[in-house]
Image (cartoon, rainbow, N blue to C red; front, side, top):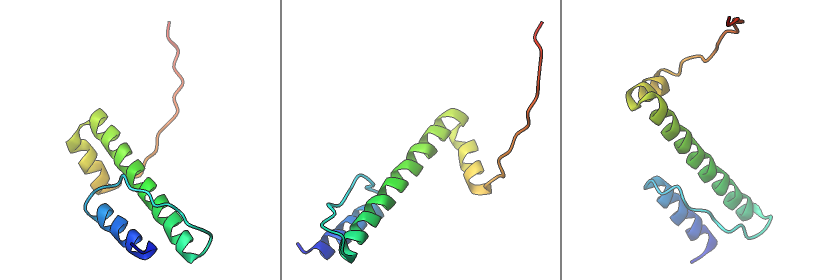
Length: 84
């Protein structure tokens, strides 16, 4: 298979939900940059899924889905407390 067909095949895998694919980067040409970019994208998608899974396990799937949908602004406050 040609390098372009290999990239297309890998894109199809990601489209089908298989994020565990990486391409061999041939060189520093535009094709190599495309392969490198694909690998970076796949890594980012895997990391996003890992974080989503961890978040869902700790707060519950429903809360995780609502938080993801609403995109709340995260913040916090600092408090000092003394324990006697």
